[in-house]
Length: 161
Image 1 (tube, one colour):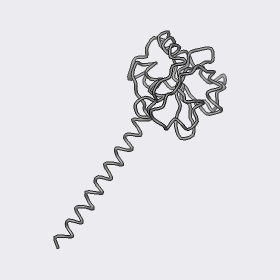
Image 2 (cartoon, one colour):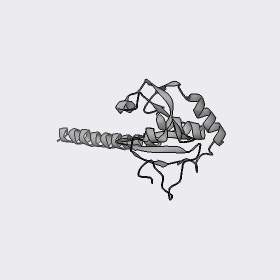
Image 3 (cartoon, helix red, strand yellow):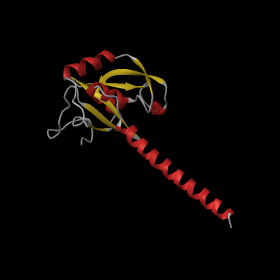
Image 4 (cartoon, helix red, strand yellow):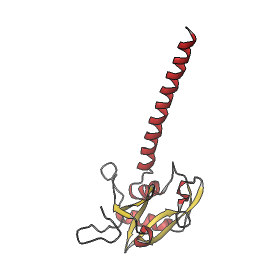
């Protein structure tokens, strides 16, 4: 994994169509590499912490990878290549370039930057971050239901004595 945005002789350089995973504090930002040092990504006015807000318009931007990184760690991560066939490189780059400047409604659960990047590469709108968060929330909810059932059962049992 790269520790910064400057590949060394041992690191792979991204190729057009590659997904770039950027490790921000508390979340991961995703972009699509389109060549010549540029990525296309889905952001809100410089991206700050507004990534947690839903139903706001985000803009699709073309920027130099180095500028998007802001010193954060990153890696090439085409993690769904074994699950879905990537679209042709020219199609990914053309579609990504066609979105530049577009304002799209952002939703943390159904359309975030990872959904956007995966839709461009695979034609599938999916987000591992959302899936993993959902499993965590689902497990927590199941635990709370079991706990509530146990407490209610115990209370009902106490009332019978």
